[in-house]
Every structure is written in C-alpha cells, then in structure tokens.
Length: 376
Image (tube, rainbow, N blue to C red; front, side, top):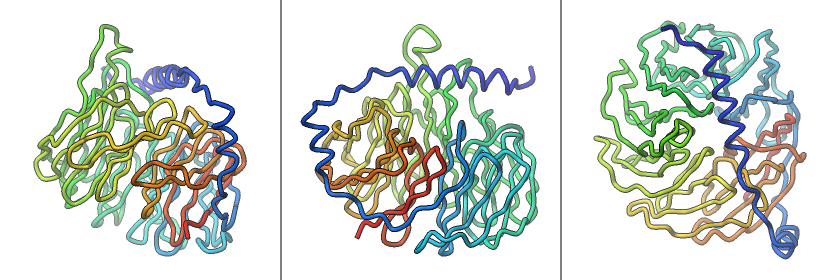
C-alpha cells in the first residue's frame, strides 16, 4: 500500500492536539511573584522574520552567521553581534524544516519534500526531491547531507549535487506523533529515534545499520496508550547517546555498540541535552529534570517555570537555557536547577531549542521574533 501522507499528517495533528490537552500547572501566586522578581537576561539585539503557524524552525549558527527561516519561504542571514541582515533569499516554496548549516552550506526543507541547499552567501547550490514533508533541519557532515522526512525515512544525499546515496526506512505504526525529530551525527554515524521507542545508529556513508536500541516499549491497550515515540533529536558526546520518548522513558546508550547504560521513566515530546555530568530533559507538563549522565539517578527537578510547555533545553556552560510557550526564556543553574534569570520576548511560543552563539544564545518565536541574549 502506498504511503498516505495526508492520512499520516491528519493522525499527527490529532495526536498533537491530544498532547496539548495536558493538565494545567497551577502556579502559586508567590511563585509568580518570584518569577517576576528575577534578574533579566541582557538582550543583545532583536530582529523579525515571518510568522510560523505549523512549522517549528531551528536557528542555525555557522561561520560567524545566524541563519533563520520562515514558512513563507524566506531564508535570512543575520550578523550574530548586531542582528543586522546580511542577506535574504525569498523563494516560492513553503518551508517546513530548517535551518541546517555547516561546511559552507545552509539547508532547508519544504512541505513538498524538497531539500534546498545554499552556500553561506545565499546563492543556490541545488534542489533535491525526497519522499515527503521535511520537518527537521537537514544536516551536513563530511560531504553528505542527511535529511529526515515525515514518513520516517532518513536520506543520505551527496552534498555536491544533491543526488541520493542511500535511504533508510524507519517504522511507521498506525498512530504516531507529528514531530520535528531530527538526527545526530558523530563518529561517522547517524543516530535517529523513531516511533515505537526505537533508536537506530546507521552509517553516514551508506546507511547500513550499526545497531538498534530500545529506549521505550509500547504499553497499554489502545493505540493511543501504546504510543511511545521518540519525537526529538538524540543528544550525543564521544561515549554516550541519549534519547527520550513521549509516554515512555529516557535512556543513555554506548555510541559504539548501543549497549544500554541506563533508562528511567520519563515522558517528553520536547527533548533533551547533556553536558559532562548530567542529562537535562524537558518533561511533559512544564518540568525540567536533570539525571546523572552515567547512572540515571535523578539529581533535581524544576517545576516552577510558570509554563506547561517548554522548549528543548540548551546547555551553555554552567547554564541551562529553556524557552516556553509564553515567550519567556529562562536561565537555570546546571548543578541544582535554581532559576537565575528570566526575560520576555514578544509573548509568542518559543518551541525550538535555543541556539548558542558567541557570548550568548538566540531564540525564534512563533511570531517570527528573533532575540539574542547574553550569558556573560
């Protein structure tokens, strides 16, 4: 049976709506006052691009430039020091995934399954067609572009001309979460999580499977109860790769062979990041949790951020940066979870992971606001 993209998207939107119907966190008035009294994170600059209704764009930083995209098909390069526009490319396509940057390339994906490649001056290099909509940023490494599509395929494309080198087909259960799960690349391998709680390591060069690991097992009776999709990008270092599943578990595995180090009960549709000591997970319901990287022991939880929906966390030195659906960015101390500072943007949701830049970080809101803050 051919893959029905419209049916897949319909189920995806239905599940996304169900995920939004979480019980609201009741914030004590004193806690709200404490948030208001926090020191503000210094803003460096702000800029604006097009609004976003459905897509969730990731900002990219590479070669001393910040790259942002919007649904109207505009790609913009900004100066990371001032926010000034260096160049803008306006296309007739509808962007749905991006931005990826590296090796002198800037990459975006469209709702029609097109991969658009530009050089870092904004000149078009090539366009490639894949099977379906692209929701996560394409990545480039060692002259190979990795693209993930909404139908659970991962493509390896030639970075010179966009021709197909290989494709991997992941599992597609009857019900899945429409997600922006991307891929992590390290040591000549591509790491990706899929529906059903499985994480796969495949060769960057030919797509061959190196190992498969189970992060979370489906549980329950109904298809909805049994959903346990990995909806975010794995976090990786030289030794460990970690992933978290919606309605499932968080776990860390050895990079070389996929051997399980630990797993813990957790549910996240936003994702995780890690440093040399801890794994930081944005849990469903507005909680940020830290686990010991090598044992999985719970270290701390921060549930007083005033929001039920947080972004993927960003590790920035001794700070954890996380945005929320009310347009706030929060700076949290890494070893104990204390909220150190907090700033507002334009009131629109910040759902993608903040992007680190020299001396700070930058976020993009659903209204198209691009805000850079200092961590110095």
